[in-house]
Length: 217
Image (cartoon, rainbow, N blue to C red; front, top):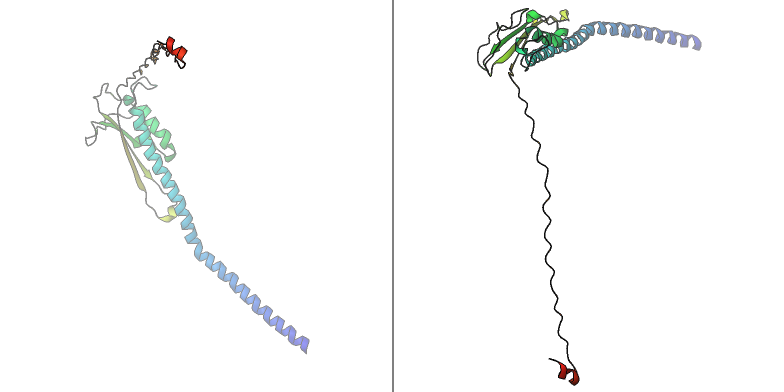
């Protein structure tokens, strides 16, 4: 009788344990199914932000690099001044922004007379060099780049974003390099004259005895 009661109890607890274990597994699967969309949105948002920041930085750096190239002094490798080398200016921008999908149609090159003045966007026509040969002192080269960012995680519902960057630099016409004069060699001060020797006069003899007193002057 004792053995039968023990067996019944063990079977009873085993059945309860199996039921509880089965319920915990089912509950874990349901919780995971509810959490997986939020996990995917979190990872998708991190990837989207990283890629957007990369494209944004590339566009800004490309505009600065193109403006720096076009404002340099001298002639480019194509034999024209840098501010006329429209091909080189756009190539400089694409070297930096190529990973962001930058094309020539998204790069506008113009000139202005300084901050607050209007920009002449006809300076660099597509596929040609600038027609202007001489520029006044103080003119600036302006580079405007515009890119439409397409989100990679489309399930987040983020619309396309316009990224724009404008950079301007004053054109360097001439750069004169003047040699620094060499300072004259240091001269040593003349030696100081030594003072003349002083003559020492001997003291007169001292008389102390009567014999010596008679002969002392």
